[in-house]
Image (cartoon, rainbow, N blue to C red; front, side, top):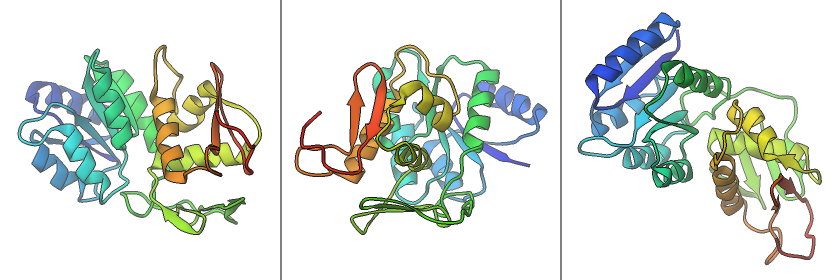
Length: 238
């Protein structure tokens, strides 16, 4: 049975959510403080971690930062409705997805199940999904057996979302991938209005890959549509 770690100081909400998740075939563990939640998240015993931003002692963003230094565990961040900054920072730090409070348990369950369908690297709680051969495009190499990426022979540390996003872009190199396609294929959900999740993940991936050539991004934005990956310098800026 898949285990879900819920880190939130609202004891009543956590208890109700745990009962709902367990009625849906998942096992829930609760933690109500940031430090306790971090210790349990680092155990590697959970399929998904549901992490609230507002926690006593160590807040959720700090928990996420420390977790990401050691693990690629799947994380859904709980944020206060309207707190866009928390959502953006959370994605930048390495959350796989977010759900604003108040939320429907059914919606959270859908997000959890979508994230559980994504593989994670050996660094996290899951196991690699072996494939026949690495994907190599220009100076980027993706090894699916170990879920590792090298760019210019330099190893990169990517979250599960960033890894899957890069795979989608490389396999579609030279073609525009819409933001809606990225949301469905990588995040496992439809893109909501004013949802910047895809853009934040692409921004982080760009930073880690670096430029193709000075002033020339590998991943180029197509205004109001999506993104395209180029495997050779185009000679121009975005």
